[in-house]
Amino acid sequence: MITVHQIPDAFSAAECDRITQIVNDAIPSDAKLVRDQKDHNYRRAELVWLDEVSDTEWVMDRILELVRLANRDVFDFEISEFAESAQVATYRASAGGHFDWHSDIGEGRIASRRKLTMVVQLSETDAYQGGKLELMTGRDCLAASTARGTATLFPSFMMHRVTPVTDGTRQSLTIWSHGTPFR
Ligand SMILES: O=C(O)CCC(=O)C(=O)O
Ligand SMILES: [Fe+2]
Image (cartoon, rainbow, N blue to C red; front, side, top):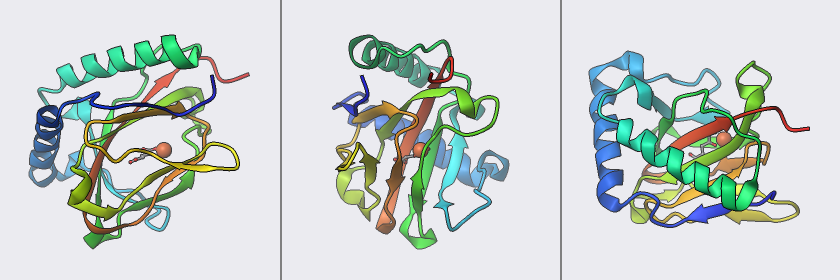
């Protein structure tokens, strides 16, 4: 089905803490782990790939289970693999953090095979202002729940954005699953 599917408490508060701690420790210690975006007007966020930091296998195990069940029960897409590592994005108000309207399906060999996107809210709702994940579901625009630990899943072609963070810092985890391109 073509829809937005939200799973409250996909990760507990303690688990969100563990993920953000691992990522925040990695940011200052190794600049190579943080890939800044080239086009700063389009997206401003610091990115850490989970497969480049240690002790995150349990995160991938949980992701696998969440995506498997959501796809079985809701989407029923042809998904065969996770061809890219999960990434954690840090959007800081002080750095103009945001991500303009986009679809996750790109032209590259891997990006063209993205089918299902899952985003997990890692920050406390009141840790930031703005920074809303908005999805274009048709004529309407849906704001994803900001509750910490909620997973939001949607078809990767669906247009979405993160509004500018105007105060504080928002962190989120994104994972794509891949398969035969939509047809
Ligand atoms: O941070 C978010 O809520 C969305 C991230 C996103 O759209 C992406 O990584 O493609
Ligand atoms: Fe996206």
